[in-house]
Image 1 (spheres, helix red, strand yellow):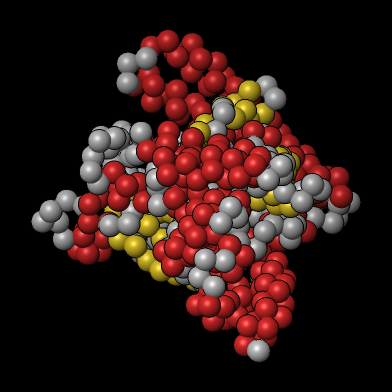
Image 2 (tube, one colour):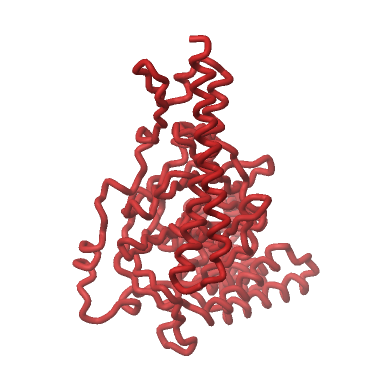
Length: 468
C-alpha cells in the first residue's frame, strides 16, 4: 500500500513542483520537494527542481549538490545552472565545461540549443578576458543601503556635480518617463542635465539637455545609439572634464545584468559625438548588477553600487580610492579571484592604514550629495522703472519671451564655448603651442557670442516695454 501510494502521489508532486517553479514560487517548491528527495535522492526531476529553486533563492552552494545529481541523470538544464554558478564564482573554466555538457545533452536528446547558450558562452569568454585584466583598486569602505534610494549615500564634493532622483525631473520640464531606479546628473556649472528615459521599444536610453538660466531645459537630445548596445542605458555620471561619461548598460557585452561602461565625447558639427563605450571590467563589474560609478576628484573618493551580495531590496555601495593610471593585478596572483569579486576586501587594502579615519578625513559635507531642485538659478533682466524679471513667466509679451529664451540658450552655448576655450588654454600652458591659432579664433567667437547675447537681451526688453 505504501509503495502504491508513493507511486500514485509522485507524478502529482513533480507536476506541482514544475508549475510552482514556473510561477516563481521557489520557496514552495523547496517545501514540497525536501521530503521527496529523501525518498528518491537520485531522481533527476526532484533534484533538478529542488536545486534550481534553491539557486533562485540565492543558495548556490546547497543547490550545486542537487543539480550535479540531476546532470548525472541527463537533465540538460541542470548543466546550464551549474555553468551560471561557476560564472558567479569567477571560474570560467568550470563554467565552460558545464556549458559544453549542456550542449552535449541537448543534442543527445535531439533538442534545439536555445539562444541563451550563445549568450552564456559570450559571458564566459568575457569573464576570462576580464580576469586577465583585473584592476587593482583600494576599497576604503562599503555601505549596505536601500536599493530605491541608494544614490543618497553618495557624498560628493560640489565640483563633482549633483545627483537627482528620477521623479524630480519634471521640475526641469524633462517629463516623468524616467525609470524610478535611475538617477539624473547635473555637473557643477549646472549647464546640462543627463538622465535615462523610456523609449518606444521598451528600452531605456540616455538623454541630455541644456539647462537654461531660468532652471528649465532646452533642446533635449538622445545620446548615441552605441551607448544602448542592445539593452538599457542608465545611471549617467559626467566627469568635470566634460568629456568622460560613465554609465550602466545591460546589453550584450556584459557579465550579468547592468555593467559599468565608460565613453568619451567630443564636439562636432552635428553636436556631441561619443566614442565606442568600453566595459570598465573587474572588479567594478560582476555577474550581477553594477551601476552609477562616480569619481570625486576633489575628495579623492570613488563610488559605485552593486547587488552582488544578493540581499533583497538592498545594494552595496563600494567606496574606493581612484588612481590616475590603471594598474592591473598579475593574472597569476593567488588572490586574483578575491580581487576580482571583492569577496575579501582585505586583499585590496594596505597594511597599517586606518581606513575609517582616512574616509572621515576625505568625505565632504553630507548635505551636498543630492541637488535641491528649488535652487535652480534665475536670470536677472532689468526692465527699467524698478522692475527686474527673473523668470520667463514674468513676460507678458510672447515675442519678448521668445527673445529671452534665445538669450538663455545662447548663454548656455557661450558657457560651453568658454569651457572648450579654457581647455585649449590649459593645453597651451602645458606646452602645446599648436593650439595658439585656435585660441585666437575662439576668442573672436567669444566676443561675437557676447555681442549677440547683449543685442538679444535689449530686444527682449524693447519688445516687453513697447506696449506697456
